Length: 340
Length: 259
Image (cartoon, rainbow over all chains, first blue to last red; front, side, top):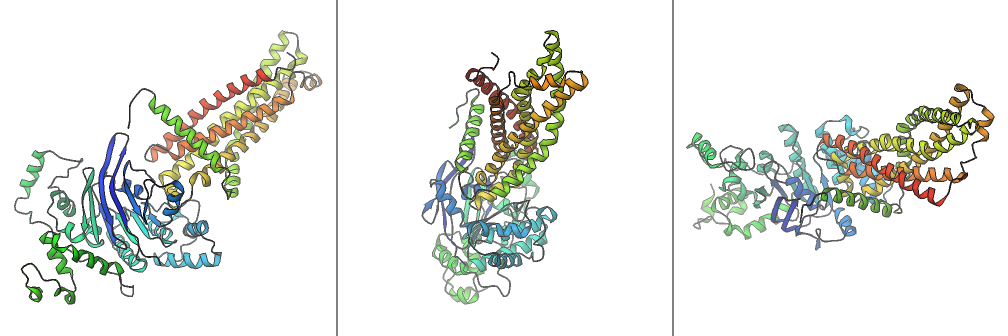
């Protein structure tokens, strides 16, 4: 399987007619890691996803993949680069006229010269990965939303993409199915080592699935960084969103007035104890390979540890396996004694 | 980037429509040609528009026949009824019925189909898979619209003339021999060609308008309904405009036979 590739986004801006969707978005999706992009509804998360694959053209900025700038390259080159992508659309975006087998086989028939026998083997493998073995002959209209998503995922993975984008994989699914899907995403990442970007507004997904979290808010990227940084953040908008409470700068519409914010704060005086306990990240199921991204990420994070806020430093140190923890003394240099 | 002056929106839309037309022309020769999609769509469009065309043409042909017979009688030229009737049906009635049906039934069906695919993100999915939806979906549909328009025009001509004959000869008691003998006194073969050319142009323009609206619907499921509605209205205006221009040009270049 192909290893993931780094995606570097710089100064990206997108607007429709006169309304700015977001501007000055700069972030790097580290190779092979799982990143989540959060944001209140209507902040242009899906627009960002579509800009990444070149379905929408941003006005400014650049998106670098394999030294190609997607914003300024030729249409021919764009079509080439797109073959590196697998995209799971919100409702699966399956072709309504084809059954699930033909849907999943479609990219292979279009872009490879594989025989029908080889195609059958690959499609069978991907259908098994997403747990749809036996449903090959069904039409997209005959199955549930969760199954459509999984079939869409099988199709997105069939060309062994280096980058996989998920547009709200958890929308319209119950919590149990969401948990299964998230586990499936972690397992797939372990198997493929591809770079994943997930757009969602589900807090549960955001707190357990990703290596990195970003948040779009007020027409810009409010924050992007390792999960520990965002999940322990005291930035009002980030903290409010990740705890899912009314108290904070985010209102029913985009913003709210100061009086309302005061009133709401008064309601919970004393209860704002800060963020809940950091939940452990999902790991691949037993029997799955180890995620190669984990050690790469650990090296990266440890290199920048001293630049992070102290709450994030503690969270990262707590998440280390015992064997590693002694290499990274806590603040004040307690060394090995800092094991809680 | 946006400077608002009245009519800017309409100009932008027109420009994009033409851009799609150019794109379709460019992709027309890109291999592999989608033969299955083309045949499937041609059959689909025929299904939704053939029967209405026939049903539409019978009363339309009859009305023309009745009107012309009455006119001819007043001038004392009953023997020439067939001549006028054939010319009217071949040159105007058949292409107009074709235009109404190809834009109203065929175009609406194509627009609704593409619109539903757009909001289900199927079109985006195709693009992401590195496949041009224009080459894959739009080109076969536009070609199918052209083919079906040309065939429908033939059907409308035959049904119209047969209907005219029936009403003139059977209902109004005209002379069969005189009706048929006068067929080619003013009508000529080039009338058929121009009639078919018009039908082809109607199919082309209705196909591109339907594809354009279908690929760019207003947001939401309601948007698809609006897109279909707009597509039909825009195609109607466009095909009648084309009809006028082609007819006026033709009459300048090829004078009437008896004139």
